Image 1: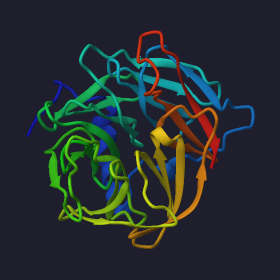
Image 2: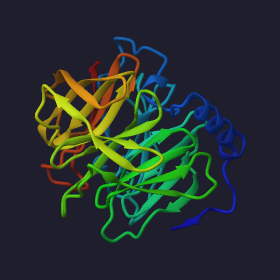
Image 3: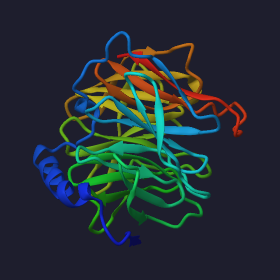
Amino acid sequence: MTQNHPPQLSRRAVLGGATVAALAVAAGTGAGTASAAADTPKASWPTEFPLPDGFLPEGITIGRKPYAYMGSRANGAILRTDLRTGEGEVIFAGATGLVSVGLKLDDDGLLYVAGSTGIARIHDSRTGDLVATHQLTEASGHFINDVTLLGDRAWFTDSRDAVLHGVPRGGGGAVRTLPLTGDWVQVPDLINANGIVGTPDGRALIVVKSNPGELYNVNLKTGYATRITLTGAENVLNGDGLVRIGRTLYVVQNRLNLVTVFDLDAKATTATLRRTITDPRFDIPTTAARFGNRLYLVNARFTSPQLPDTTFNGVAVPL
């Protein structure tokens, strides 16, 4: 695996990356997780906001401040939306051949982006500037889909391969490749590993396999994947984005227009169904992010024409 960096890292990568990564290691959790959102949205804040026509959204992330970052499958553009007003601006224009799917915002202002075609990118969330690019794998036959922050690395899923990729937080260092073993069985020609979050104790990763709809607890040292026992639900078919708040796990089931809410046991080996969230505004939501007492989702509208004039939006629902 090779890495390719621009000549200079951003100010945030130089000044903040190493410090924040070290603090995250000590805490045992990744910065930018669902618990990072500190403020509570006011009732006047919009619960629906427009995205540019033809944007083809897939990923969304929110940090400590009321701004959502969303990525485009059309050209890799990144949109930042003010949750207080619903107004957005493109901070990274993208380019032909680029894709932005899963995203995670770190506390140092760095934005980690799953680039689908074998690539992980790091952007400055303030300016949109590209800080670093990591070529995780070959483009053909792979789909770098989602990302989470845990310890000193950003962990990326590959929906076409039984492997996770750990990119050092802050922009520099070597990528770690973690093959998935144990209970994990790769299903050919389908979306496998998709959404990813850390476990409540910060010692492992939870990965959803979209087909046939299973959750796994992945050992960070060995890659051994233990299938999580579901209680009250047969599966999480079409599982996409994951959000964890304490021991509560939210699973976005995209084509079912559903968010399934589970209670995890202490070791994240069992998930018990608590409730489900549906909304008439859901139009194949793919990923979600929490801010305060709301869950924000983007509608990918996979069953609608994916054209330059197709309309897209994001919606918010109560937790």
